Image (cartoon, rainbow, N blue to C red; front, side, top):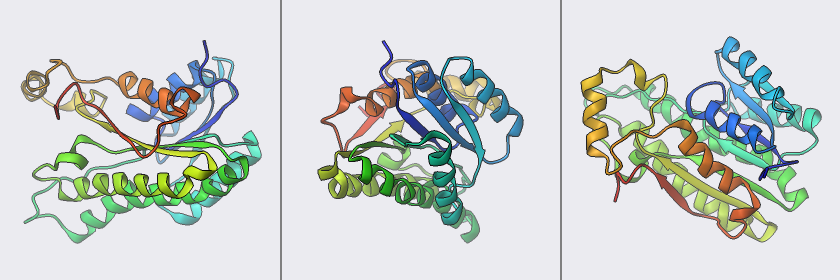
Length: 248
C-alpha cells in the first residue's frame, strides 16, 4: 500500500539525518520528492539517485530556506519540475549551543533565522499553490526542547517553541481551505551527528528514556507519512511527540 502515491513533497534539509530518512520513507510510500540541501552536494546527488530507483520522481535543490527570496524561487522551480506541491516538511535546522551568559547575538540570530524564519519563508512560499488546490499538509519539525526547554539551548528552544505557535496559527488560518498544519517534536534521535558523541553520554540518554533506546530517522519519518497522508485528514494544529516517552 502506498499512502502518498501521486503526491509531491518538499523536504527542507533533506540530504542527511532526519530529513534524509523522511525523503526515503516518503518515496517508498509513492511520493515524488523535492528536497533541499545547503552544502552536502555528494550526499544530495546520492540521495537523488537512490530515490529515483524507487520509481518516483526526485530532485535535490541547493537552497537556503532561511532566505526569503530563495524560498520563493525554490517553490517556483519545484512547481515547474513537479506541477504540484501537496506536502511541505520544514526540517532544516541548526544548533549553536551555549549558556545564555556566553551566547553571542550572532549565534542567537542565526539559529532563529535557520530554524524559525525558514518555516515562515517556506510556508508563505507554498501557501498560494495549496490555496489554489484547496488542499495541503504542512509538517513542521520542532523538538522536545521546544516543549520543555533545555539549559544551554535558549536560542534552539526559542526557535523550536516558536515553530509550535506558528503552526497552530497557520492551522487556524488555513483550515477552511483544507490545508493542515501539524508539528512533530522528536526526542533523542540517533543520526550521524549523535554518532560523534562518546558512548557513555549516549548510553546515559538512552537509559533515561522509557523505551530505553534512541529514536531512528524512520521513527520520525513514519509519523510524517501519517500526517502527510489522507489518514490524518481530520488532524490539524497538533504537536505529536516522538520521543520514546521522554516527556511522559
